[in-house]
Length: 390
Image 1 (cartoon, helix red, strand yellow):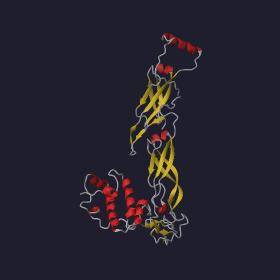
Image 2 (cartoon, rainbow, N blue to C red):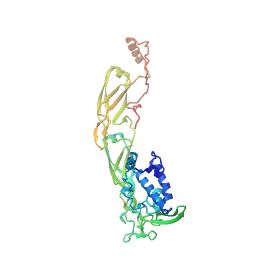
Image 3 (tube, rainbow, N blue to C red):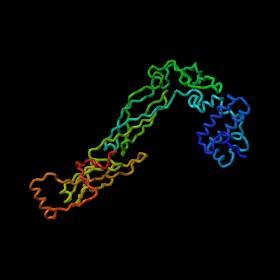
Image 4 (cartoon, one colour):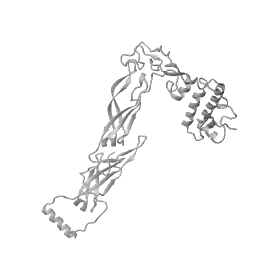
């Protein structure tokens, strides 16, 4: 008959992993042989440990929930318990595993003085034209670099680190304390060598033993065509050198796109608004439009063009930058026409308009009411306000 591992730990069958862990913690503190030497308690601790090992493993727990026993016929974990305390050197190790008493999250031995460096971030202002075409830009960065005097070792030339006398090179010190659980051994990083196991007795004068120094340098960054505000370009290995001369992190260059006086961006598409005199809108005309790249496009305005009319110039927008850094086509340029009504007329102009109104029978026009009216005014190539700049 399959054993009831849930009953062994005293938890419900729908207990969460955290509830199972808390139950095991409580029982382990009561039953561990360092606290309770009674043989019955040791046998009970074996059962509790086996139950926890099973229920903390999702695959084994699934077998239990289906009515089976993942450990077979009465054996311990893995088909035979062997030493039930093989994974625990004593109560101090159990406390370390559950409450973080061990150095480095349960790791043993000294930690390496060589550590990887941090990433660095630099913001770069670009115009819309530079974002569209891409640009190579020299940038100045101030980061930690490898100390050329000690080559990252931290010691003065001709000397070397010595073994820490306090921890004997182990990188940690242990202490024994008495508590209601009995004698508890805890480990912590050595306060003298800070867990490295060795001490730099004669540090390098240039870096003070850190293995790195701060320096200002100039590097060239290649910004691909089609980047936008907030996008980042990664320069591998150009970040901060790590302590002890560890490998450098990466440098990320973040694009900050400046507003443009004529165009507004919407992804790879561009938008602009052109003011058109009402006579040109009524009679029709041909406009010469300067694009972002400095080229020129002719735009035919049909007679009777209405305010808000939109013309789309296909492929005259920005490059479409893919995630792999390659360009796949271009966006479009959307030209929005704003028909301007003159505010001041001289007598001759007024007479001409009255004649036109008479010819069209519009001396007393009846207004046409619509749901959407837009009386906004824009300057020539002014930003199209309906599209916010990213």
